[in-house]
Length: 187
Image (cartoon, rainbow, N blue to C red; front, top):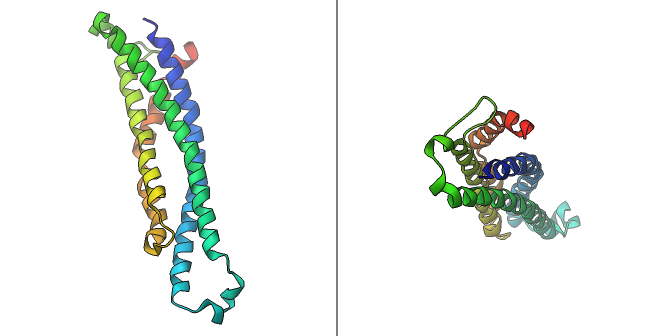
């Protein structure tokens, strides 16, 4: 069974993609805060006649909101490619395991060593990572449902975005990658 190679590639991809995921999320955070601020500004603007205030010098406030939303959506495509990459590796590992599961002894699947986790452990860790990256769909839904004419929704966008963070799940991925460090280096 060539499972260790497939698992190795999956975890290397996971390790590499995790840094990219964090980077993109860090870029999205200020954009989401900006959307909230713009929502507040639009709400305030709706209560005054702009032409009677110094704000008349800023006729492009609506366009700024749209620009911020488009920037967030552009970054979303990066998150999707990361999720797709991790999902593809996990699927390949799971398929290989399923193809050979009938001939694989339970003792072999659960056997660990000081430098290599068991196949069962690695399968579980890959599934945990895939669940974590599936949260992308919730972020995508949030962005796709934002409407620039819904000021309350825009004001709450940053809070809703942050509510999708999952520091415990991300820490679990970090811990699992640490457990795999010797295995990854020995391959």
